[in-house]
Image 1: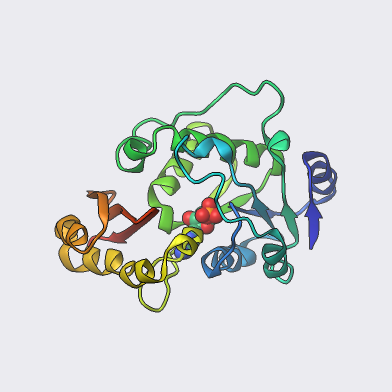
Image 2: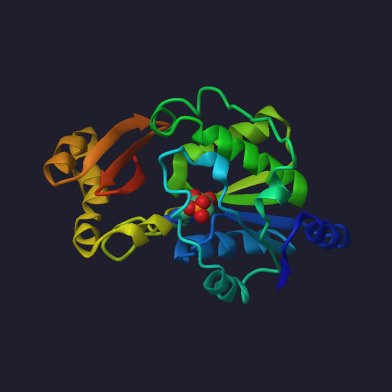
Length: 248
Ligand code: AMP
C-alpha cells in the first residue's frame, strides 16, 4: 500500500498508474461498512485507492467537525491488506488558496438531510468533484447507508458528464440491526442499546416510526418516503443517526 500525503505525491503516483482505478472516498474512523465498499469495487478495477478526508465544508457551524473521530493509525492498519493506495490530503491539498466555489445539485439535494443540514450536500458534491479530478478514477463506490448522498453523486456525474462509473453497496449493520457508522462511537452505553430501534421501527411502522421513536426517547427529524425508500434521521442524545430501507 502506497500512502500519499499530499496532492503532489498523489499526482506522481497517479501519473505512473495506467490501469483502471477504483476510488473509495471516506472520512476515516473506518468500520466494516467501509471495508465492504473496498471488497465490492476490488474485482471491477486493477487498483483500489481509499481516501481519508474529513471535509470541513460539509459540516454546519454547529455540527461535529472538530470532534469527528480521527484514528489514522488504526485506519491505515485496516487498509494495508486491502488497497493499493491511500490518499490522506490536508485541507490545503483539496482547497487551494482563495478557493471560493461550490457545486449545488438541484432537486436531489433538497428536502430530507438537505433541509436539516443546509449546505451539506453542496460540500459533498464539491469535495467529491475535486477528489474525482485529482485522482481520476474509472469507478468509485458509495454506501447506500447515505442514500441521498448517493443520489447527489449520481446526479453530479450525470449533469457534468464526469467519466466515472458510480457503484453502490448495501448498508452493513451490527448484529442488532444498527447501521454501522463512525458516529456510533459517540453513543453512550444506554443510547447504544436504544439505537437499533431506528431500523426496527422503520421496518415495523413505516412513516409511523416517527411517533414511536420520539416516544422511545429519540428526537426524530424526519421519516419520509422518496426514491422508493423510507428514509429517516433522528437524534439520540447528541448523536445524529440516519438510516433508510427499501419500501416493500
Ligand atoms: P463516511 O466515512 O461516513 O463518509 O463514509 C464513507 C463511505 O462509506 C460512504 O460512501 C458511506 O455511504 C459508506 N458507508 C458508511 N457506513 C456504511 C455502512 N454501514 N455500510 C455500507 N457503507 C457505508
